[in-house]
Length: 394
Ligand code: PLP
Image (cartoon, rainbow, N blue to C red; front, side):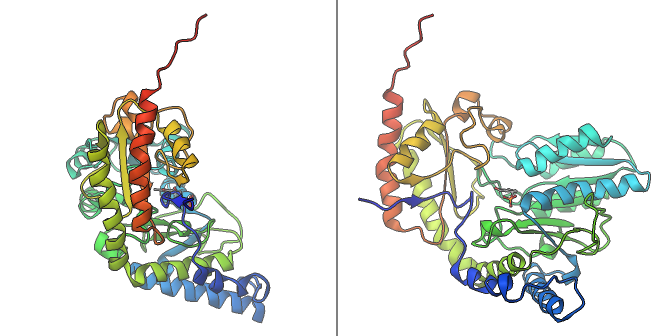
């Protein structure tokens, strides 16, 4: 009997025991509130500042540019809403430019900003591979309200299809037109280089649970000088950009996880890519009617495809019964009977978009596990294709 195989690392990763160990003392031993002036508070504050230093070194930014948040979703919300609120406070117009292939933390936030904050929102077209081209962004920036504070948000690596966006080029185009550039790097965290200077971005979101850190903690890098006013008011922590008592153990865990992930990034990415490439090569060979989704430039751990004549959600149940945990796209959308908006935006017809599968490998993935997936998957797909649906008599 095979042990369960976890190939859903894009949804979340297990917390590394070394991260748990680093966090442990900050629950019950060093429990002070970092905002308190006494020794208990100072001990906690020191832990947060050490965490900030570790992260600043990896991101190549000043320590004050890091804002700790409660998750990737919150970081994305702050990146989009913060500059809009700041613009409104000074009587300026605002504009958000993004794409429907973004995670809902960005696309739904942009839509809500458009509906409620008297702000223009533009959704950019993408290629069949899910890429936002610099030309598409340039065309959007050439029209629209002049003098508006414009925030462009394009993700670093896509959660459903793994596509890596040309972030440097897109950020450069945004800057040519005086716009701010944010990237949601939640899926890229622990997989791709994270030097914010080299990327040229003004804001960048990360979430610890995607790179073997704890759930419920994230960060937003905000370049100095970016006008950002949080809609969340309160105690003024994080330089007024994220009010609320710091979650010290989780922040310590975030920094430790990032440190571990970036200590041997290249070797680990190569390991991931070896497993991924076996999946990408073998699945279309073994299963006719398979179309790989995403681009050649894809996240190292990410394989995704659509199968003709298969329902992705039913396939997931079959795989689960065989002990394989996978996803049909975004974890938030798994089980949703509607086709993925990401695949529809990329130009896939609904029927095909419904047959999607995402396999994302991780640190513990073995060759034997990939062998097992390649053994089980063709049978599961064939079985689903052989089922004839009998129309219900009325
Ligand atoms: N952005 C992307 C690309 C994601 O994949 C996710 C989570 O899956 C998020 C944002 C949200 O992060 P969190 O789960 O920390 O809220």
